[in-house]
Amino acid sequence: MKADLHVHTLYSKDGRTTLEELVEYALLRGIGCVAFTDHNEFVAYARLKDDRRIIVIPAEEVSSKEGHIIALGIDRLIPRGMSIQETIDLIHEAGGYAFAAHPYRWWSGLGERNTVQYPFDGVEARNGRSTPSANRRSEALARRIGKPVTAGSDAHTPRHIGEGYVEVPDGARTWQDVVEAVMAGKAVAHSDSRHLGGTLKYGAKSIGEWMLRGFKKM
Image 1 (tube, one colour):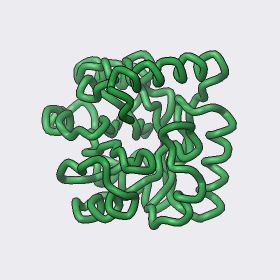
Image 2 (cartoon, rainbow, N blue to C red; image 1 turned 60 degrees about the horizontal axis):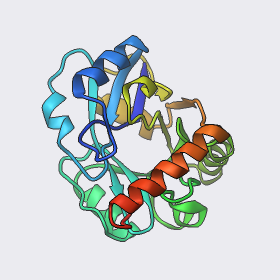
Image 3 (cartoon, rainbow, N blue to C red; image 1 turned 180 degrees about the vertical axis):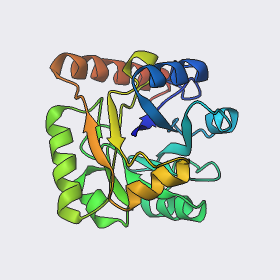
């Protein structure tokens, strides 16, 4: 089974994908499971958790003070703006697992030092919106520190869904099965990468959105 473990919906401030579009595009691309990782939001899961067409993992992309953290398998909203350790602790209290999101990404990644220093449960090894170099380094870092890996498209619009995913055993039937496979090291990470043109567009877009937010990070 293919599972895209980093997908945004319109409940992210910078997302444009409706829940119906998400399911439609995921199924078209052979994705059997998705994790809703909206920025500092936990609304989408409740609205699609009973959908029988696709497995949905309760998740969130949390903005810690130092960078983004993926929370998988949580049962509540994790507040933004906390330290890395506080964020990890809250994710664990919510029954979830904390993954360092795109650690080598300028602006929102945690960086190698933080990823190694703090007790993350795993590393996002591949991300469809990261550069080839950043993805290679993330994979190598996960191997070096012996942590489970995730991967995702980081799609903010429907057409990018499925550009990153993990492969897990086909026997998975629930989101708990998928998360268990990830934590057991049975997930194999795949993704496209963003090259120079896309990176420049992303940088310009990020700076523009930052200015519109009153110079506050996402």
